[in-house]
Image (cartoon, rainbow, N blue to C red; front, side):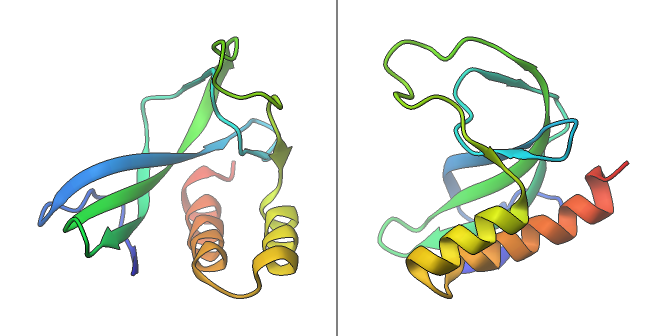
Length: 117
């Protein structure tokens, strides 16, 4: 179950993982984020609740501060960048409607409110 957050981390359950949606200066979102250094401001936008472990995976958004080298063995295809609309089109074509599209809708709203210059 995907839960929209209001900029605060959930505190009622353990957080088992955190995934980032990095934002670049030219408003493209970096998908393969290995090797990125993010700004310290990280906005929790959504959490996925895992009933089997009674934990959350939290999704945060943050601006990219700089690009570092991708550590050996992390990403074999390099970085992939796209805007939210392109991500939406790809996910719709491959998966159809679902939780990833819900996450993109939340990300779009948070981006417009907190990250657009």
